[in-house]
Image 1 (cartoon, helix red, strand yellow):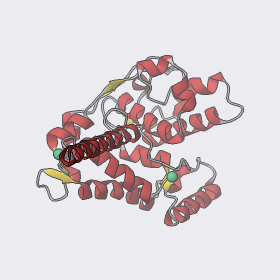
Image 2 (cartoon, helix red, strand yellow):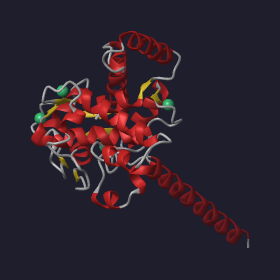
Image 3 (cartoon, helix red, strand yellow):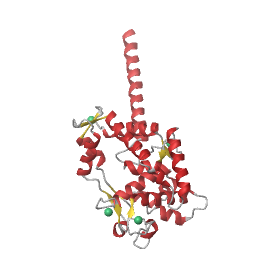
Image 4 (spheres, protein in one colour):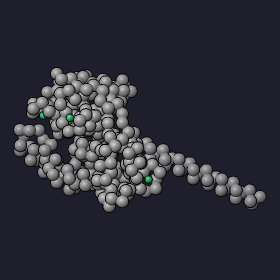
Length: 279
Ligand SMILES: [Ca+2]
Ligand SMILES: [Ca+2]
Ligand SMILES: [Ca+2]
Ligand SMILES: [Ca+2]
């Protein structure tokens, strides 16, 4: 009798354990799916800034996703499997040589990463405003990556957070810039259904950069350090200071120092800048 009771108790305990493990796994895959959906939220309090804490949490989360066998080290095959997953954008965008100039802010026939980022951010903010009409969504669709399924269902573009819009536009920039020179030319812009194409060479170069001690595997701490470095670079190279539109030099200075001050107090850097520098 006593034996039976003990066995039942052990079975019950094991049942609990496996349920807890399952719940934990579901939790992880829900909040983070970096390889399949790199637009998973990083700005967890949705204040439009990525703080050091949020960047650190996101880095740990991404690390766990990329380290598919969970042994605490990312080796090259794991890295390539996650980072070179591609995807095709839906064709539901009106990008054309005619509206190229709308995104080419200084009209020099080239859309830089910075122009693209600002264009996306403006389109997102305008789509979020109370006065937003259907046309704001048409413009936003020029910038944000949407899968063919998402293109057909308007709810994705209507409900995305600024964090998600930022990473989706960073992906679109990479997809449109087919020759990888960090500039989008008119014929690249007019591509209606570009594919994310991260090749093996790019993945290998990124891997070597992050693998600080060059021993062929990336630890969690190396990954975190590399992500943190991007945050620091953006704060010190003045990318934050360039965030105001040209011609508003005094506002630009104010916004720059305000961002630097808020970064020091923990608010971080604007989500658009962070996302564009880490994709
Ligand atoms: Ca935040
Ligand atoms: Ca591993
Ligand atoms: Ca330009
Ligand atoms: Ca190009």
